[in-house]
Image (cartoon, rainbow over all chains, first blue to last red; front, side):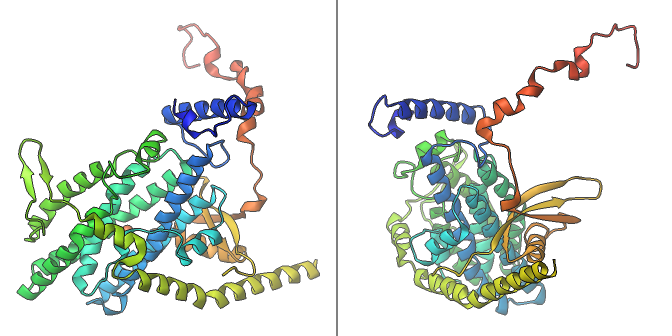
Length: 330
Length: 96
Ligand SMILES: [Fe+2]
């Protein structure tokens, strides 16, 4: 029945009948767990949903380099600095894999980047929080990359082939990110009282924003139902969030950290941790552009793009020169 | 904000180890094939995932059309005699 919901109300026109047939065949392929590939027929809404999701994901990876990049020059040891550079480079790589997947849907990378820089596109709310201490770098790797893994593992089985394959690549690299973050936290937790306090303070600031990374509650999420039917999404936001809490709380206890939620407790009957209400007004404010660092992040991206313009143009001019030279030789 | 022209799109193929085929892994943008190779190295082999890379301009790839794939692959469909299982060989005949 859902095919009707997608058609324009011009019943029984030959095009609509054909569309209905195509849609039914498309859904049957999805139901058989077949992958959809770039040149295959797909409903417009499937294409649009994917372009939106994949490009938002790509933008998040790119903007996500900024809060961590903030500490590359100040990492406490040469080894930590090398690790952080490699980690940030991976995030740039993830952005590139994802733009590459989005481009298979018929949008150009330049268009997508323009959407980000002009402020029309969204990216994950989490990257609009500041990183004032070294412990923030630990907390990001452990919690933010941890939440990202939880979100991304099911995406490895997404119905759209290029997105699923990009996610496999990303997930392979993500575990390093999470472990190096937890390693930073471990070292702080085993350090001086001031270092332990620094770890607790970072945890306090990143805990709730990490839970918000999974998006609105199932009731409030506009996109879930269709995305689940099309196997773009395999689990709901709340399911993934619960899983993240269940995994993370024992890891926090191991570090000797206190979860900043007085309502948090283990529900013996289900084995799940119950947690307090999320402040969704904060989430909405950050999404709307009013988080602590939204303006700073976009300004930094725009400046990087502008500063790189002459490089892009010089490279093109050089390539053109080479082509014309080989042509004149021939 | 638009550029004079965008860097071209290249498809990337990586040979993971000696003895294996090159396999498609994704794409990069670059101004020229040399740069595409370097970008592909930085993007797809940061953890020694390859020993050889091919780059091909995406515009140069000619692909079969999925909407036409039934008739296109039809000639192979009814030739079951191409498969060894088509032939019933008595059990007594060994190593065949
Ligand atoms: Fe990561």
